[in-house]
Amino acid sequence: MGNKQSGSMSNLGKKAHKKFKKTLRDMEYKKRKNKEEVQKREDANPYTLEQRKEKAEMIKTQGNDEFLKGKYELAISFYQIALKHSESSIIYSNIARCHLKIAESLPEDLSKNQLDKCIESCAQSLSLDPENIKAIIIMGDCSIKLAHHQMNSLFLEEAIEYYNKAIRVCQNKKTPINIVEINKKIINAHKEKQRLDQNLKITRLLEFKHKMAKILDDRKAKLMQNIHDYEECHELIELAKHEENLMIRIKKKIDQIEGRVMNFANQSRFKKKRD
Image (tube, rainbow, N blue to C red; front, side):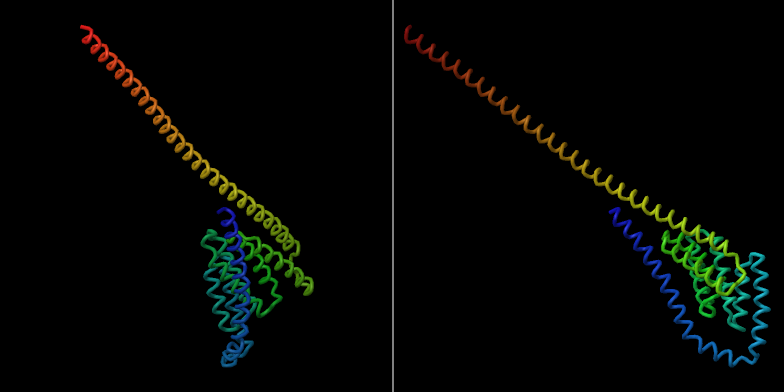
């Protein structure tokens, strides 16, 4: 039973990770399919591309202000309005960052929806700019959260891959970003992976111990029942033996009495004849 439970926990983790990877693939496919439609909408827009970008930038700035105030839901609203004017990898990564912040403020059992939205926004951001370092790092941070939520170290491996990718992009583009901080994230992710893997081993050992204890308890109960049944059976046998001995003694007594009666009768007949 315990091994099956451990296996089911492991299978659930693998399924969650596969779902995570499938979500990313689905988003990329959806983005490619919608690209032409987006282009048509932009072509139909009466404003020039530059005008739309300026409008989007202005609204994005308002969203940034709300983000700094900690009003993440309101910031998302501004970013979504900005996207209607002009799609931007940066705006999508800003939305992802908001969802991650909201997830961090919620209990783990309530944060999954926000983490899913964070992944979706990051995927959209990276589909527009695969080298958006902010989106790559946020994907790593989100993977860390998912690892805690799903208790699955596979997400930590994903996080490490994203952080390493961020460093490579940073070095290639010579982007001014704190590589030391990213390396700290990688080190922490490795430590967290070791901790989760160790906890999983401990959980499996405890489940195995519980299983063996249950088997021993069941066997002990069965043995005690067998002993009880044996004792009852033994008592019946002893009682039967006692009754058999009693019947033998009674029969002997009866035989003795009958013998005495016969002797007395014989003596009486002999006496009468003599008289």
